[in-house]
View 1 (spheres, rainbow, N blue to C red):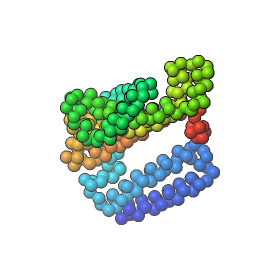
View 2 (cartoon, rainbow, N blue to C red):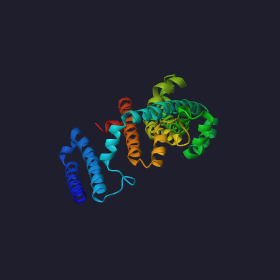
View 3 (cartoon, rainbow, N blue to C red):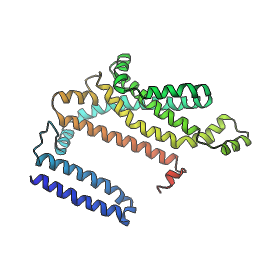
Length: 283
C-alpha cells in the first residue's frame, strides 16, 4: 500500500502547490502558467501509477502509465505506421477537403437565399447522423484504404465549419456594409475586405472543433474495415488480444496528435485574428 499512500500524499502536496501558484502574482508569468497544468498532469499520472500498483489492479483492466510508456518506447515503428495511416493519410486530407468545401459552400449560401433556406436545415439533419451509421456505408463505397476514412472525416467536419462560416459572413453590421456601398465596393470586394476578415473568428471556432472530429472519424471508420494498419484497426485487434497497454499507447498517441493539431490551428488563429478583442484580451 506504500504506492497508494505515497501517490496520494504527492498528489495532495502538488494540488496545494498548484492552488497557491494559481492564486499568487506569479501566475502572470508565462512559465508559471505553463507549469501549473504540466504539474497537474504529472501528478495525475503519479496518482494513476500509485493506485494501480497499490491496489494490484490487473493490467487487463487498467495498465499503469509506466507500462504504457514502455510499450510506446518498444513499439515506436508500429505506432508511427499507424499514425501515418490514420492521421496523415485519413484525417488530414479529409479535414482539408471538408473544411475547404465548407468555406466555398458557405460563400454560395451567402449569395443564394434559396440555398440558405434549403441547404442549411438539411445540413443540420446530416450533421446529426451518427458516425457509426455512416462509416460502414462509406467504407463500402470507397474501399478499405484511406479514401473511405477521408470521406468519413469530410462528412464529420463539413457541417460544423459550414454553420460557423455562414454565421461569420453575417457578422458584419449594417453600418459597415453601408460604408462599403458608399465606396462603390462590389460584392466580392466587400467579401474579401470586410466580411471574410469579420468571419475569421467564427471560421476558426469551426476549424478547432473539426480537429477533434477529424481524428475521431478516421479512427472510428477503421473499425469497419481497413488495411492491417491504422489506429482504429490496432485498437480493435489489441482489445481482442487483451493487449491493453498497446490500446492505451494508441490512445496516448492519438491524444497527443489531436492536442498538437488543435494547438497549431489555435496558433494560426492567433496570428490571423490578432485584431479581434478575444485575442487582444490574452495579451
